[in-house]
Length: 468
Image 1 (cartoon, rainbow, N blue to C red):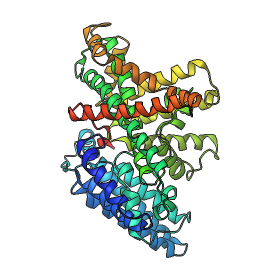
Image 2: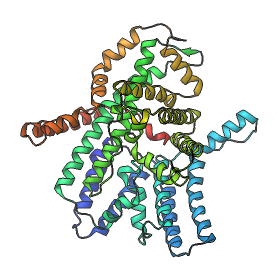
Image 3: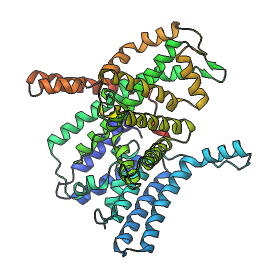
Image 4: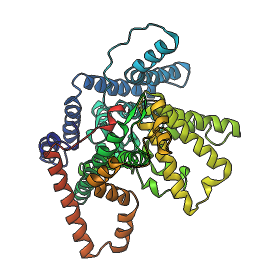
């Protein structure tokens, strides 16, 4: 079930809210049960079989964490901890990378291995990382293991962030699972934040997808069947699509969490306003970056090691970040491209400096890397990028780019403007003034109604997170 769908907006969410708030506030555990059952139903809507995998992983980690807490330090405790981590990773690797690995083995070594039929569970990368972080933190003694299995299942399966993030830590919501104080202010904020996220997804990301999907479809084994202008337009549109898709789902998750009394951290903070790639990655998909920082980078030594070891640490983090996004060499190449940029900035000192041209270079570099991210293969990515410079293209410009601009130009311009911190700047200047508050409220309501109109008309609604 997707947030921008009639099933979710007209049936699931109103019914869940009604069942949740009809229970008196003092019965927090009963409300937890409602949220847990609703979350499992939400996932089972399109993942009937895989909901058992989700539930099984959550319960297994709940039980293992209890055992680890009671065990004394020693080899057996460490072995059981490693078994837990290996079990989570095994599920992730099997469902997400088994087919890709076998295909590559057959291609390179003519291994002749039979390719299994594996259906990728939606959101497995997100809920696996959440389950793993819970066990790791209990093992480290960061907090006590939860005795109530409902609490752990709710944490892993909570529907607002289940299939599209952000990746939430148990420590961030631990107290709120048992001691929430829902109020009208948080609910109102959550509803507004959800509507804003819905607008980012339906009105901006989906409209950018119409351009991006059309342009990337021009890449064939023979070359790019389009012009330079069309290639640049497609790359720019996809960059905006992936941003508003990711950021939109994060906003919706943060909003839904607030409606039920939970607070999730920010996941995107206007990354296109960054002056370099180092700053960019402090603003983009923050929950994923901090997860790799805390559970991979720092345990490997972080930056408190000699330079060669630090380079290895950063390399491993970005290699894993690329692999996390999907089973394709394009994701590996995309991750290593980020590693190369961060390494370059570190050695040149650009990571600590800000120049006016830094914003342009950062956006341009990221745009080229997302072409690789979006492409079906490395050869297709190379064809697309070469076409952007007139190599292998059909010319400089033609009617195709103009047709896209004619149809989606207003949305493209709006997406480009709103990708920068214009609204926060206006809010800072006019916050508290009645006119601004009225216009803001009216704007949010208009966005929501417009989204409902697009959804009712079965507007184009691609799901990027299927790969994750």
